[in-house]
Length: 185
Image 1 (cartoon, rainbow, N blue to C red):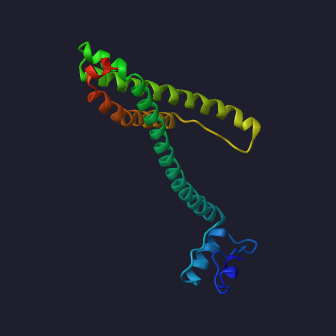
Image 2: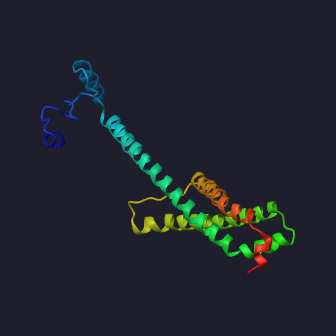
Image 3: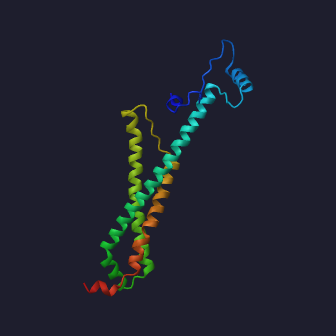
């Protein structure tokens, strides 16, 4: 059908062959490969594995793109949250700075806030994923959701990277904070 739609009626992507009774599929594959040049004859199991591999490769690229987009969205959301939280506490940071708190201590405070916020969000998402893995098969038996330890570790590693990157801009705000300006308001 695809060849006909493209106007290539003399081509074929797949030709199905049923072996004669008593012939093994492997014998037929060997005979076809020997008799016809430029083709790859496969048994049903080999063909199935090839197709599975193609689908897996196509879906892996889509998943990589979706993961990258999710990472960027997470980075933007966490960055905005940490930035807003830091700006809301800028007066307190100024008071701490005026009382002698060093930039290093304030940086650590902002970074801890970022990591704590992201860790709580990641922990909630993992708990929800586990809950979904238990409920989804009950609702849709043909869909299996499995949460693996390696995937959970990747979630927390990605969350840590997001937290570290998201803390950069607020740290710059705290570093440039003039403690005297806090008391002028």
